[in-house]
Length: 236
Length: 297
Image (cartoon, rainbow over all chains, first blue to last red; front, side, top):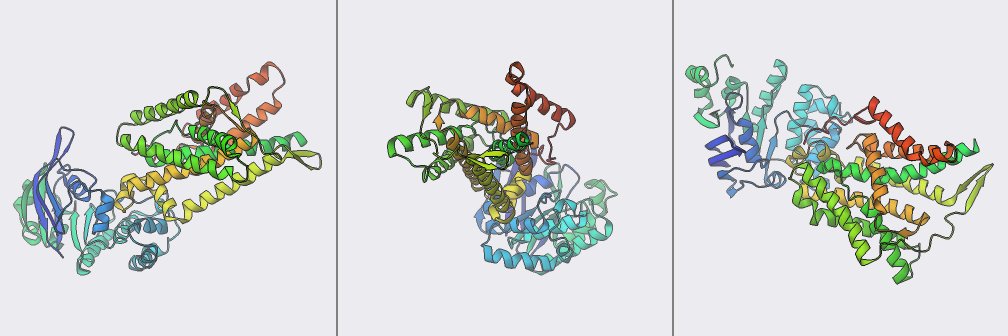
């Protein structure tokens, strides 16, 4: 589904990603973990087309996509739920979803808005509310719902549980599992490294822009050494 | 009282015209973070279109508005394609300079290829006919201006609220990258914003020219200044703010004009208007409407 080969991304003179290679197979749920500043967000933004890699190749569903405009990638089936959600606070919940359906025709959009709304019951009560007034949990659900409007094959999520209360964190992890059950491929960046790895098929550990470990989610989750040395301990 | 009502009508007419232009400024600022100093030149383009239509094609005011609006839309779209698209990712100062350059270029081209002198063409015959309501006499053109402006603003409100294009422009104004991630094509939404800003400027140009049908190379600058001030009063990037800012500015100008005593003080009209605006910014530096996301690029 997705394959990165020696991808390097720089911000000016700073190398944020250093020759990173990873792959996500169809139907997999893959977790990408690592300490702050490791380059996790940079990696997702590079894949989604917001950043252009300095070198290396990115292949998605058999085609090269490095440096492709995000609007084009969404149409090919790759959606990103960005860091800090970035829902449109001035737009209503309904308008957020409509806008996210920009990739499909008007009729499909209408049907899909209702489908997505039915799957995220909490949003239905806030249909005409400006998204700026949503709680953190509602906002995160809207962010995911918005990404699903384009019916992506591969969904990238950047810190979906950031700033959420523990019960809501559970909801989001259940949502990730449900997305995989629906047949979507998921690549998630998470601060709750242990929990993310526990539900993931496979995981990658990124540190200072480099991949330092990879394996099945279970193996990584059970590796105490990993948490000590790369994730600074204490993170659960 | 009579005087007051007449001023109110005049102020609404002038303010409405400012609002149409300010909305265009705000729209483009929203999607590009550019204060487009070439926006006033669309009025000039409209004026010369009117002049050529009259002179060469024996233009009638029945169809000239369409030609003028069409020319404004085309000119606005053209500036995006030939100039702004290439500096979109440059720093804001470069974009600002590009817009200044376009403004100066426009002045120079009309001077060289037409004439530095004002070119007049026939006005609408009924423009200054008056209607009498009790003791109040109102020019027909004032009522037309208010009606057309109100219609244009309501229609714009519906476009922004109901159509995918409108929602996309609002979304892109708040967070451009997030809009791209949702599948909004950057080129298309920006070109659309320029086309819509051109449309609104075209409507404003028609209203201005029906009253004073004359084309002069630098005529756009004073309208531009008013529009930028109106957009800033409202809170740059806020669409309702641009409308309110336009009306406030139009009202201020009209009322000072009317109530300042004849003589020295009436020459200081602008000073009074800008004095009030300065006070507004002392109290509310962010403008009348908050734009929480204006700082984020």
